[in-house]
Length: 119
Image (cartoon, rainbow, N blue to C red):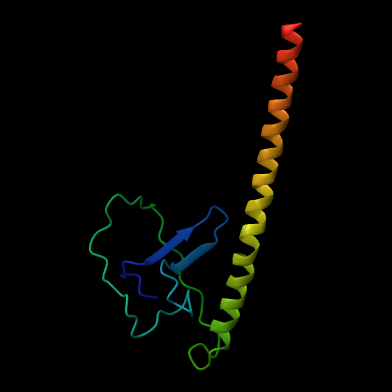
């Protein structure tokens, strides 16, 4: 991938896993390649207000055989992304339901305590 592109992002997690991606999701063969003629490529001019770690980003993994020869790898990555994206709204709804239940529980306890105080 073009690491000098304004939209390239790399992040390494404490587990050692590294994510390399296009922030515009225009690199179907990420983390290995950007499209040769990407219409949104812009050279990064400055890294304003960024926090840079002291470690060197790990090397990009070896390209799988056949990358760029057919669309199967990009299709596989797209379908994996679709699965993750489809799970997001369901997970968010579950978390919000749990928060609402906790808030209602706290509201009920406050109401109960208020009634005891008024007696």
